[in-house]
Image (cartoon, rainbow, N blue to C red; front, side, top):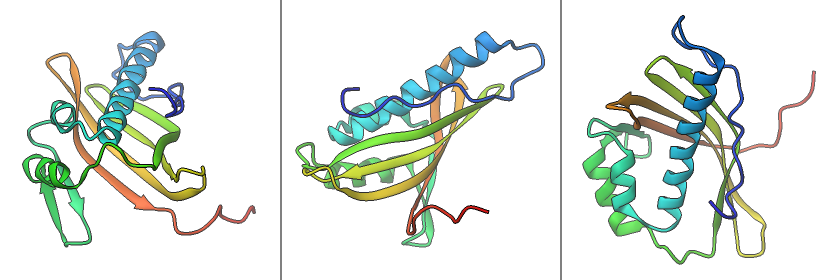
Length: 154
């Protein structure tokens, strides 16, 4: 995805005992690819593409409202709130993918910048995937705003 940065897909993963590092690398790359497709779909307001990434049983917390939101409601929200011509750019940084047999966690930072390149926001994210019928699907996601700089060194 042009301009979105290349995620790190080489962290150590925990997998079933009979797996090897080539399998882990391939699965990590597959999950990272889905993450980048998801970000591309969000930035282009392609709700149909997002629908294909989210599992039918996808649920995410909506802390501002004190509840959880399922796939149907999230897609409805996106249809009315996403705009493809935003001057803001988004990129994933420092993404690590960990594989747990048929489940995966993708953790990283989503950075948003304005037209001048100044940072608008940083969100830490954790996305949960399950491999079903040969493809990775998101079953949950959570973002938390970074509200301070780096922690002090010890």
